[in-house]
Structure formats: structure tokens, C-alpha cells
Length: 336
Image (cartoon, rainbow, N blue to C red; front, side):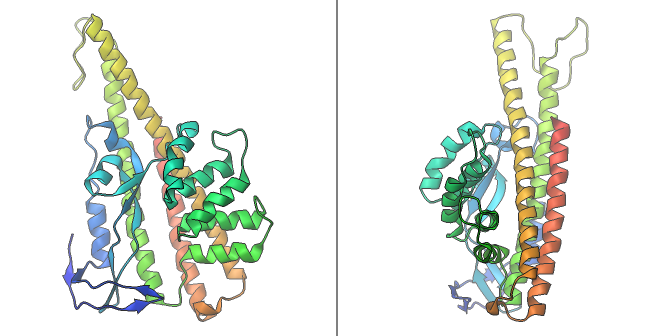
């Protein structure tokens, strides 16, 4: 990754104590490096190379203008399970192909205070995923825990429940308050635009990763199906297919191939549903933007024109992200 060495400062922005640093990467270089870092997954790798997780990485150094720098909070990125481990991150896995098992797996992390896990637990309760019915009261409890830690997706979801009066009394001022927090609107234009650029760069990397994992899954499924197919006497051997045996070892090999295929197909379903769920949350955020536009101006955000400009940029970015996620969902449907 390219870096530019600059003067180091300790500054205080918006009440956030910022760190002393020696060098920072520009948003443009960060974006290019992030995209360049997404490599195609080679067929034959372990299943963990096809499992996409929410990986919590250390905070990055951000640059404002030409002189000021600050330490951003720890950030959540989509990553493969393998890559997250290599980068020293902590991951949360929400297997959407098994909602009943997901709640059991997520709950310990949620109870330990992980905001990503708390948000997913809230979603399970809100939508009744794997449950007999939705439980909006529990959804509010878990969304609130994550929202109070500053987790944007949970703030959007909590605001949506307040807006609709689900699990809590209907309260539009409360809904707008959470929506504003989730939007990242700030009086400082440089902070807002720097954050939005960083989000765009990370999201493009995420989409590249999702699509390349989908392509890798397609290739591995084709190879696995070819290896399972019966071979006629004298038929040419399929390149890359495993050797066969008419014995107990052959039956064991067949069971392994069937198990491998089932795991790959579960990953396709889980990732497709995850992309659709993320697109749905983006639509909630777009709805929130519309409400903020119509609502009273928050004095801390400066002029009305400044707020409108920030909201307009946010709206454009989120619309682009919704389209990209739905395109990824379609690609994964084709693999199924």
C-alpha cells in the first residue's frame, strides 16, 4: 500500500481525541490498494476461503485536507474467514443458510458486547428468522445495545422500529435522532467526505470480494460435480477430477465429495441472503435520508444547504451500493 509521509499532529475533532502518527495513506491510494488486494480464489482451496465474515480490524489513520490526521475507530469489513485470521481481525459469522443455528452461535458474542453480533441477533428477532414469530421487543433490546456503541446499521434498524412503533411506542423524533446518528452527518465537511470516501473504497473492495468468491464457488462446484459424475469405460478423464475406485475407499470419496458440495451450496445461499439483507438495510438508510431532508434542521449540522449537500452525496453512494448488492445476489443465484 502506498503512503505519503506528512507532519504529525495531535488534534481534537468533534470531541474525539486523535492519535500521533508518522504517516498516512491518502483515500485515493487506500481505495486503489484495497481493490488491488482482492485476489481471485483458486479452485481447490479450503472451505474457509469461501466463507465471508464480518471482520473487525484495527482503526485506520485518516487524513483531512493536507495537514490534519486522525485515528478512525476500529472498522468492520467483509473478508473471507481465512483472510480475517491472517490480518489479525476478530470475526462474526452469520450463517444465513441455518437461521436456527445462527442465533445459538451469535448469542455468546452478542452477550459479550460485540455490536455486530448484537445487530444480527436483533435482525433475527425482528424478522423471526428461524423462530416461530418475530419478537420486536427483543429486537429493540439488541439493536439498542449495538446502537449505543455507535454501530450505524443498528442505529438505522432501531430508528426503523421507532418509526413503525414495533417493540416500542411509535416515536418519530426518536426515529429521526437515530437516523441522524446513523447517517454520519457532521458540521465538519472534511470529516464527512473523508469518512464517505473511505466507506466507498471499502465497499468496492467488498463487492469485488463477493463477486470473486462467487466465481470461485462456481468453479469449485463444477469441479466437484465433475468428480462425482459416473465415468463411462473409455471416456476421457475430466481435467482436475479425482481418481475413482470401485471399493470402500471409492464410497468414502463419494461421501466426501457430497459433503464438500453441500458446504459450497450452503455458502452460496448464505452469501446471497446476506447481500439481499444488506441491500434492504441500505434501502432503510435511503428512507431515513428522505425523512432527515424533510425534518427540522439540527443546529449542530450548520446551514441547511450544507446538510442538503451531505445528504445528497450520501444518497448517491447508498443507491450505488444497493444496485451493486442486488447484482451480486443475482450472480449468486446463477451459481445455485
